[in-house]
Structures are given as structure tokens and as C-alpha cells.
Amino acid sequence: MIQSLYARLALTLTLALSLVGLIYAIFMLTTVQKNTQYTEQTLNRDLAKALVAERNLVQENALNKQALKDMFMAYMNVNPSIEIYLLDLDGKILSYSADPGQVHRTHVSLKPIQTFLKGDAMFPLLGDDPRAENREKVFSVTPIPMIKKPSGYLYVILRGVQYDEVEQLARDKELLYLGAWVVGVALLIGLLVGLLVFYPITRRLRKLSKQVDMFRQSEFKSLPDFEVMQGSDELSQLEKNVALMAEQTVQQFQQISEQDSKRRDLFASLSHDLRTPLAALHGYLETLQIKADDLDKEKRDEYTARAIQFSNRLKDLVDELFEMAKLDTLDVAPHMEPFSLPELVQDILQQFEPNAEQLNIMLNMQGDTHIPFVQADIALIQRVFENLIGNALRHVKQGDSISVLLQEGENSVSVSIVDTGCGIANDALDKIFDPLYQVNNTHRGGEHAGLGLAIVKRIIELHQSSIEVSSVEGEGTRFTFKLAIL
Image 1 (cartoon, rainbow, N blue to C red):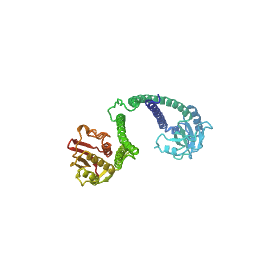
Image 2: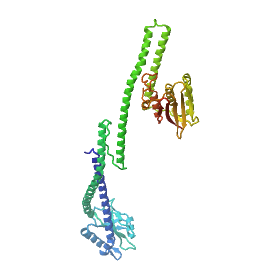
Image 3: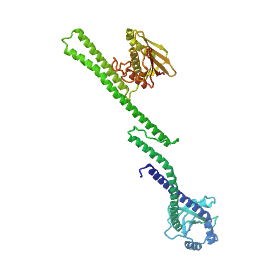
């Protein structure tokens, strides 16, 4: 039970309230003691002077020692709460009413005495207690035998040893009684209030913990019914964040599951696409080995060319597969740098110029050729253009054109690769970016691997952008994406 948050909060609150109650009791005791000292000294301010007058301690401007002795004996029995001392002008104790051996000082400080006699002292004013080396008590004092030329002081301790013993016992009982009531009542009220406040908080936390545990038991695949309370406090924010985190976790698991399913389909397709050129390559090489002496030079050259053709097909497929796998890794990040996009496009068009001339295809760049530098990975963007233009060359015929259109926007450049080829059917537009998918019924049968557009899409996504495609059968196709400018 002590391991629960509610129990720990209750225990913490109990200890805190107990400490507060103890401090309060000590404070009250100190305050009561100060008030008692103030009252005692104020009421008995002129006690020493009254004793001198009442007991006729001064006769003919001289101290009546017999009267002083009688007063000592009388007050030891009648009023043991006070202690009377006779001091000289230096504070030396000459005589006293206490029992012999109980006085441990020979002198008392004159500073509080002089402050007392000035008449403007702030009470309680404490003076030295002759019975203890390090103790002070409230007192009353008067000069004797006369105010003008005194020979000493009558120094009266108002709260003597016997008074302290009785008061200490009463104080202990009072402290125990008062402290017990203060701590008990404060603890009870504070505990009730604290528990009433803590209960709904810990109840929501227990419920949230139970929901998270259910989510864990489902292996983070089934989203529990999180109840999010309306509010802007930290607990409501925690509930919202946990619900959002759980939702994102489920979505990520679904995405991982879908990607895993696509990856299995990809491997299944690759097994066929790899097996076909590999089997053909193996067949031609085996034929060359077995019939090497029976084949003429023309046949050997033909078989060698066909073997090289399938070898190149296999190499392209493996290269694209490794490139796709690299782009799908979680730690890949494009190397962003500024460069001139028109210059890159011009270089790539020159790269495809020979093939385009053989097919009688026109390549050109249109739009804004004087634009600011773009911020992107130049090698990856070059790969995008190569894949898109190379793909367009496979779907155009003689006399068609392929254009790269650049249009400057507010914070980006819109790039379009437009061809006037055969176009793409509407039902195929949503699938052309899938790995190994090829349009026009050439799936697994063309001269390319079918990963080019999937690679293009992944590269554009790494640049925090997206690629769109539009096409009309018989008229051509347009691929469009955006790159950020400086």
C-alpha cells in the first residue's frame, strides 16, 4: 500500500503537517513565555523600590542591615518566587536571600540595571541570574540608600528557581496539551483536505496508468480508449500527450506493418526479376562453354552480347535495389548545399542528348532560367532528373519532346518534367511509385528494374517535399515537385 502514489502523498502530508504543528507549538510557547515575562516585569517594575520603603531598609541615609536580613528571611518563606540580592556599585553581590551554595555568580552585569533605571526600557528586559553562569531573567532594581548618592542596588529576580520549577512543570503540561491539540486538529483537517484534493488526481493517474498498461499488453498495436479531461492543467496535458503518443505509436506500427508487407511483396517480385536475367545469363554462358568448339565466331559474339545484356540487366537491378535500401534507412540525410538548378538541368540534358538524337526526341529547358540558388542535395537531385528523363525516353516515340519547366515561387522553385509520349492510364497513376511496378503491361518484362520512380519519390520526401503526377493517355505525362530556394 505504501508503494502507491496516494499513500506516499498522504504520508508526506502527514509528516509535513506534523512538522508545522511542532513549529507552531514551539512558537506559541516562546510567545507565551515572552508575554509572561513582559507582564511579570511590568507589574513588578517598582517592586524593589517598594521593598526598600516597606521594610525601612534605609534609615538616616544608611542601609539598615538588620532590616535587610529580616526581609531576606521573610521572603524566603512568604514569597519564594522572588530572589533578593544586595549589590555594590560595581555589581558585586554583597548579600542575598537564597540558600548558601546556590549562588554561582559573584558579580552581575550593570548594563541592564542602568537601562532599567533610565525609565524608558523596553520590556521584557533580562538581567543576569546569580544562580546560573549563563542564564538571564526579568528583574526589578532600585538604588539604595538614596538615589543621589547610592552605595548599592537592591536587585530582585522576579522568577526564581522555585518559580521556574513550578512553571517548567506547568509549561511541559501546557506544551504537551497545546501541542497535541494543535498538531492533532491541524493534522486531521489538513489530512482530510489533502486527501480530498489528492484522491481525484491519483485516481486519474491510476486510470491513465491502467490504460497505458493495457496498451503495453496489446504490444502497442491496439489503441485503448483514453479519456482526456478538459482542462489546461499539467495532468490534462499529460493525458493528451499520452493519448497522442499512443495514437502515433499505433500509426507507426501500422506503417511498419504495411512497409513490411510491401517489402515481402518486393522480395517476392525481386526473386523473379533476379532469377530471370540470372537464368538467362547462366544459360548463355553454359552454352558458350559446352558448344565452344561447334559455334562460329558470329554465334559466339551473339551469345556473348546476350550474356552481357542480361548481366547489365542484373547489375542495374541490384544497383537500384541497394540504392532503394539505402534511401529507406532511418539515418540517411541529404547533404544540403546551394547550387544553380538551371546549370544542373542543362548538364543532365546534355548527358541524354545522344540518346535523344538517335530517337529523334527533342530535349529542352523552359521557364525561369535566372532563379536563385536552391538548397538541396545535388547528387540526389541529379538522380531524380536522370530517373525521370530516362523514364520519359522509354515512353516517347520519334518526334515527341521532353521538357524541363522551372517556375520560381515565393520560397521555392517548381520543377516539372513534361513529355508528349503515350501517357499513363488513370488506374495506374496511383501505383507508378510502387517498387517494381511498370505501366503499359510491362511488369517484370521490361529492360529496367521498376524501382526508378520509387527512388525518385523517396529522394523528394527526404527534401521535405512531394512529387505529383498527371497524365492523359496519348498526350503525355507531367511530373512536378518543389525545391526550396535560399
